[in-house]
Length: 373
Image 1 (cartoon, rainbow, N blue to C red):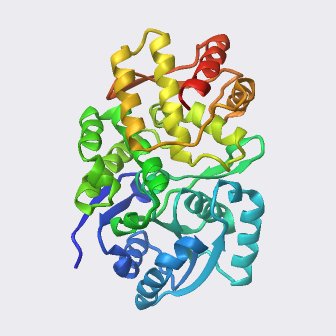
Image 2 (cartoon, rainbow, N blue to C red; image 1 turned 90 degrees about the horizontal axis):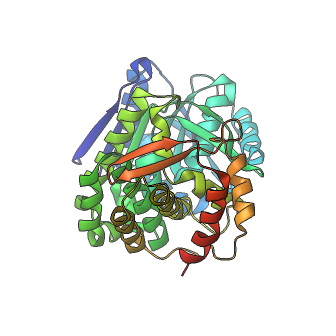
């Protein structure tokens, strides 16, 4: 039996475990059945949602594990990338699940990164008014962030995740062996999201990531397991305190007000989500320095950390006014006012919605150019 660590997300009758370890895909059937039965759900039918690239790598192992546990299984593949996270994709999946005659006792398993998880979670939240689902994340970003907390959704041309629902999974299963096959860009994107947790809540985690960067980049399980566990602990604590993002949970959006806009104006084709968040964190830090909230030295520490994760695609050609317009379409904007999560030091942030647009516009003009050089 593989060594494993568990983080509990305590949400009453909707509580679930995040299981972290190596070689867990082979045990996915038993783990899934135990989790579903613990929630009072007895089912023999699962729909696996993935994309072709991920399924080719891990689908056979996961399907074999699920079938050994007695599950009947259908496989449904979606496109790879944010541009496929659409209502059109969701509608096709609804039709396929209906043709397979899935019912309210059935469950969905999401195998893949954040896009697959967001799509599968939204389908689970809305098909037959809601069925159970299990996350099997295969990217760093999905393992530490998007698979946890119940946020599901798809994009519209006007912005990211504008259509969605809160729907908690019944299990999150993180097999760190999958991280060793990730391309360097995907690892760098995930590292940025991990740094986010250090900035918002845990300076020691921030330092740990920097100290073990080489081992993390090469996918060493011994390096990744404690980082993933700590990120999951932070998110689980925040989610159980503020499941529906009424207050505290907003700090998880550090880097996202800028980042989502960068994704939107590049039509989800140029930047990976974690890369956009990396740029967004640097812009938020610059804004915090400009507002007198963050010492310049702390902003420089963050800049060095993000730069050490990897080189990102250039954003120097983007129109600052287009980025600002996309920010104003973001779902986090309230009454036309932009909400920013701004660091005051590594390990602590504050939320502000009173930043004048002229300051934001000026910051965009300089940052789009400077951060790409």
